[in-house]
Length: 199
Image (cartoon, rainbow, N blue to C red; front, side, top):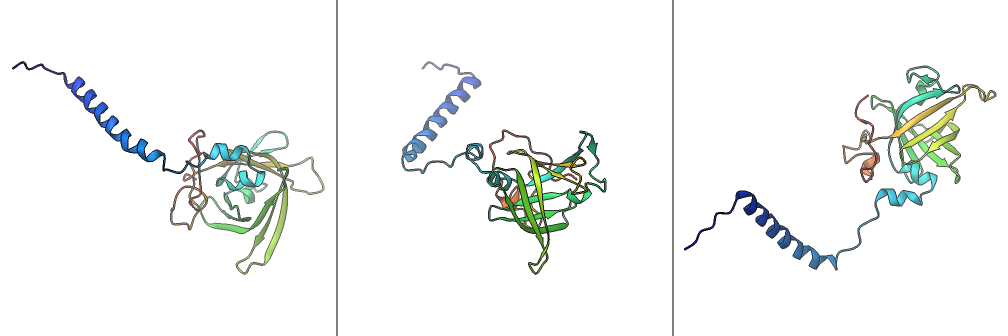
């Protein structure tokens, strides 16, 4: 009887190939019956409206810039009221939180079809409108949402751009059901999320 020694590497490679082949057979047989996979989030956003884009992810305020392009500290009184986590739901409602996860406001929102402005109203616990605000949108894409605020509505020469970036921060009060706004965050790994759970 001839015994041929097989190296450990050869044995492992042969085993791996045999397992892979046996695993593929049932999957291929089932593939004809399986429904088509949903389109990746990036493909879906290619044809998205500005409202779809805003509702596609939670947002974190990450910077502010003045009319001269100078960075403004987020604790500066001129911009601090605009800082936090924002969750825009596709049903036209939103919730915002301070960076310590304490509630800030909630209400309704819209974005113009051309993506040039965002409108919100903030409501109290009884649903009464506390205030409304319309801001021009400077940038809105799958990774960045920037809007402009004017400290004095009559002077458009002085303004601050409030920059938000896509985040994976779980909306407070949702019991951690997944990243993002109520666990609805999608993505295909082509963008590095900011560290949403760091303040």
